Image (cartoon, rainbow, N blue to C red; front, side):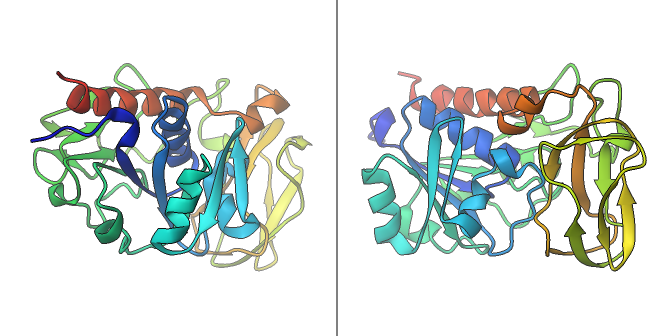
Length: 271
């Protein structure tokens, strides 16, 4: 098989939330400039300041000086690439895959299950986290669970199962994550980057208040006016209290993104 030059590889990324955006940022920074991210029309990202899905609403989004733009169709994708920008397209059914013919496909939706990704989508198909089995529905799986194996590339078998328990940051786990108490419309009372105290009202869903359970910086918050279901993650309080962390890629996301870059190089730089 004829190998494509590395900087000409076409990379498709399903999702444009926090982890997907870290992957896109890392690959783009390594001079893979033909990146297309597929997102739905109402993104649910919490860490919006580091998520390229914000381009769906704002038209464009920069994460650590790398910019993504919303596009329409194949021509829009090609124009974005020509302008050295990451392309984001509203395409929750991934129909554009048949037109861009990616060399690499990364499923970074983090749905905790496979929503339809197959080995046939690209020469290298990578799945992030639980729900994928290397050798069955993807070629490689990247471990996303915090701990000793975070970022491990799995070439046979599956990632660790979803624990349902948020990873510990600054000694806090469950209490740092804000969740919808019921189904309805979310209204925010705070903004990303705000310093909050235990007991402060952060927002509401169907008139039910959501209050902080710890002190810290509001590192992430879903967009106000979003329709949510009970239990959905709405926000993230960082007890370390560093406002800069709201606007930069996390340690976990960098580790996962680095492993995706390694996986690509394992296949396409093997000669």
